Image (cartoon, rainbow, N blue to C red; front, side, top):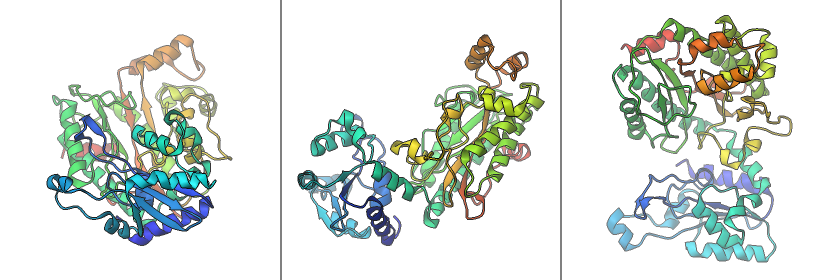
Length: 463
């Protein structure tokens, strides 16, 4: 964990931002996989980690603003637990590591919260995503679990987002640690891949690297010769000579901060001319987008610039036509790039997405579009120093989407459907890096650049 003062200061600042009442920050419980004692790998709630730092199940935090008090509710381990798990620290000793002096048995949480409610105090909680936590809060608050998130505190949501969005130097260092693992994940995959392998052979190796060097993956690995499927978790395809693969993966640092990197590379170690041409368009789009990053710039504007680079490149290849600006304004490019350019990241790979993207990625000045493609942009707002986010353009040839648009004669002024037919079996290409907004520009995170030029990718694949 970070030094004690980090958590004390985070909670102090949250009290200032929220103003009054009590804040409930539940930790996660163990989650059974197929019977109670056989659980998934444990992952603590990210907001609990941010304010209380303890990476253990069965804990709940209370921040009492008027009384300037922080409390942890949980139970010490029994001798039966210790027989199976070995010696375990006392909760009061663990709490002191994060600057919390008051600890109470877990069963007393309900009485504490209900007493606050009886006194008419404000009770703040965030939107929840685990059903066991929702049921626990239902018992405490008297709000049905199915309706619980309708009563989440908007003031608390905005306060937490304002804190967690700005990454401190120690947080950036953790993300860099995760990116260093991603370097090993990606370059190892490039070196190992060859025709005749099944996707799971590379997928399993990549996940193993994340487990051996960190806390494992930050999200389920996407690895497929069918890169046109944006989130493809199927790993059973035979990889053949001439195929390209998309590897979209990330690691968690030991303190659970995420990386998120995508690379596309040839199974046989060399891009075909056709693949190289499309790849270069995506790379140009990504590098130009990154060069625009600076404080005060709206990420939505960077996204649209990236789309125009893609449209211009595809026009040069004969796949699009007409005025590029008009094509992007109309959304014609979304046939090839039907997603947003990037998203915030930190303790969550889609950082704080569960708190509401309208608060995380948008604000009063920047509203979400309802246009196909642009509607999926998770981050549109003005960038601030300390933001960390992904930049990940792509070009995809999705047969069903192509057929649907062609049958509708959609955007016929901008799309050359006859030429597009020649690419329906192409697959997809995506290139992604993690970027920090600095005081005067940006930094692409990672001490060692993960290969992404055509030449560098081919060199590693053949090394």
